[in-house]
Image 1 (cartoon, rainbow, N blue to C red):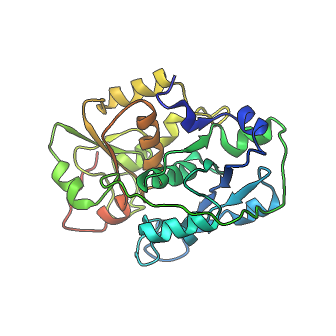
Image 2: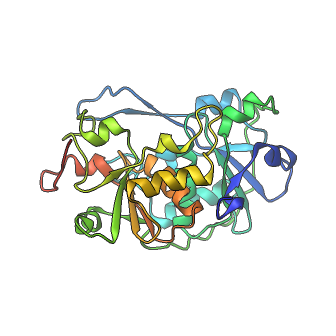
Length: 289
């Protein structure tokens, strides 16, 4: 079993507990579309339209880019200040005694991004729906078009330093055998076959565990613990090392980080700016091949 079974919720459990008074369910969907602006790797579209058409009964919608990212950053999806995060969670009815379940209609990485931020701000009673929206619908479970209207609550942010790190920490880790820098992007992007984020390539010395490799394509569920443990170990991300996960913009990296946490790794960080920053900063080293 995974180390923290309460952090992965099965569809059957959720269906049986939809009316639990302290339960808050959230659709976290965001879409990345082809870029229309020069210099941007993609165009961000909220999943709110999907939510309005159909969602799990009782679920609210979290707009990651719109309300849970730092609006003052030139980069997409950067973690907000603790006060902003706490205000948003409180407005959505999440209090310190809430039980939170997260899912998305696109990719589990959007749910794990919110999960990782909740953890970074000191909230541990959150889970990701195993299989997400795809599995819920495939099983013919109930759907709704009614928006959630929770009463406001009080979310207390208790930031945990080190769960998000910046480029200085990542640069210092290069060549340090006690730290594994882990790229969650596709093998093609890791090799440098594309200049999607600017300069093609990867952070020197980093290894590749694509976030997609941790999910079963048949039903979108997390692969079994033995399988994913072997994937990480084979890549060089062993439990004795500190792991710094990165990707394009700090999203896919949280899926790797979430699974590592589930495997019992104790020293995990996410490089929030990831290649959106690294590839564009000419002072930072990069490698290909």
